[in-house]
Amino acid sequence: MPLEPGDVKKKSASYMKYAGLAFQMAIIFFIGIYGGKKLDAYFGHETPGITIFLIFFLFIGYMYKLFHELK
Image (cartoon, rainbow, N blue to C red; front, side):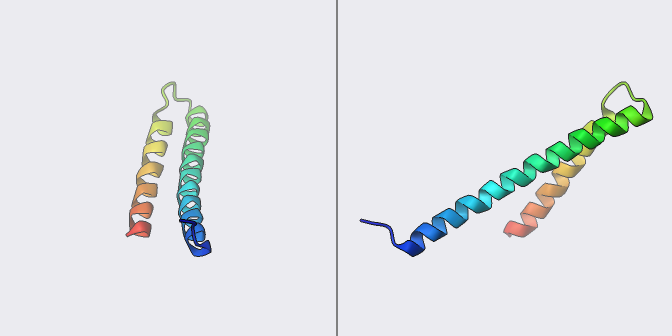
């Protein structure tokens, strides 16, 4: 049974939506790691405390945004 053109568009839109979410998550982690390393170096920390906090904080914020967006 061949797929209708509308079915193909629905499936591709769904894939693109979730691929976009994965790309956003990767960008969030990159910002957290890069910004955290810069802040740790600026403040002279030997342990990556700010980096860990920033990644965690941005991840929780993104999950909150995602929860309300998909609700």
